[in-house]
Image: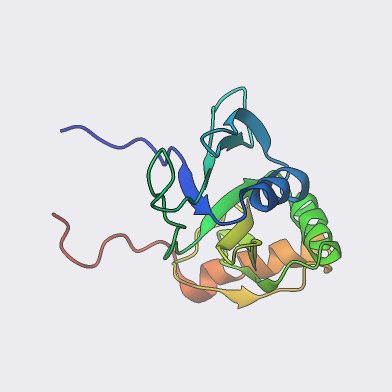
Length: 174
């Protein structure tokens, strides 16, 4: 049986294409790997040497556009990006604050430390650091990202015992 090996990329169709492009390059730090301004399309990657694009931005267009209508994305639950360290997560937190980005929450899932926030067009975005801990999901506890790395990681690890390990599927699959 064929199998999926991972998530390739997420595409978002935006009303303000240039504002979204600026946000994901300047604030989040993604690299533009390809772009077609005439089509209103931009491909972005956190790791261009290994993945051409993880995010594709497209410009919304009306029914009279020569290339046809393309409606703004609606209903995306969240787009998530991995960061290398707790320090990087903290730096992003302060950058988002400086940019007056609407931050929803900062939490630990035990398996990760996360910042949840809204991009300029109100898509829900997560930046997270993988802790490596084994904590049953869906779990989340608020954290202060200005606490020390040691405090944040110790708190996250404590949920291995409190919540228990991963549980796997509970309902039939297939």
